[in-house]
Length: 166
Image 1: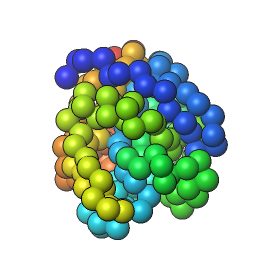
Image 2: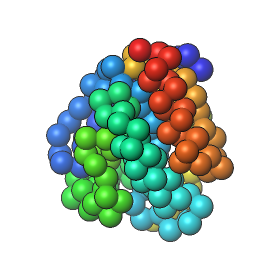
Image 3: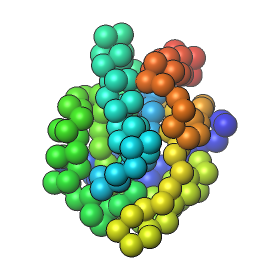
């Protein structure tokens, strides 16, 4: 807690490159997924929870203060086209929720900083669940371990972080 999250380059679902520092001034909830995941209590659950959190944040009117970021664990497969389709499937509002991929090296560096563990097993990626809240200056303020959190808890933590750490 309190550590600065590594500022890695990422590629959005629209193909544009950006860095985590580009969210400076916003509290960001970051989670990890891969589009081919079929384990109902992993990636699809986190996607549904982010979708509900997006609705809650929209109702709260916190645009420009909070953001959701889903980063793929499978950058070779999850191309911009796949990410765009995945985002569309979750009805992601690009102003509030971004889907992205990083290089294997940058993904490993980012994951290592928060205790994210993952490995490829054939077409499957075995991984733990980490959802991280970073403040407006990129410091880690909360880590949800596992998938036992609710969209309401995520939205509340994100809004609290946006208010407390400007």
